[in-house]
Length: 305
Image: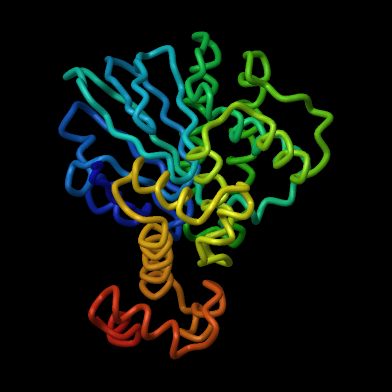
């Protein structure tokens, strides 16, 4: 059985002081093995699109139980809900870790963003990208620009500046990814095409399940929804999740909802009723009961404390 933890950007920031904007986009810089321990030190799900750019040193990176070599010529693209953990980290290991949540990425209304999402999804089979010296230098420059714009908190168009810096990073990343073997044709026109490609791929049921959960857990809380979309039984999809994570699909979805709820209560001014709507609870009492069962406190008490 695999023990794991689900963490938000705000929680990572408690361990590694990074450059963070509203728990939606962040840049962390790590130095050495001690800097890579997050929370309990167990494998973690980071609920964001993550980019790990190695600057120096070596390590092993476990992603969904597959082990990859990390060195200064590689960048890793990690989906939301990838289960990952660093191992065998050298003392001179130094990397940038850029994380972007789905809500922040969704704010960018850009046709080119679809192609980026497609590339990201198809990175399941090969999450690492080999970089030339020039490409690495460009990406470092892009990440530093994102950090710079996040720090300009007094600017009237603060969020738009961050988005523009992120768009440049997306375009530079796609320019690199498009030359490797898992690149997808730019003729794809809609997200339905993306889903069709995924269904026809050789990815495992667990990988398909993770994509579905990442896209839908805020709206779809029932296991049957995911089983139906994968054309398997409820028992089978639950078994797949437990085998890969050590927990049931129901528990996994509940922990994701609980993580989102805590972040919204702590970091936004949304009413508790609005948070309940955002997470698709039938009414406020249902959300309050769910939250109290998970935390031992009512949403209001949690926010006050």
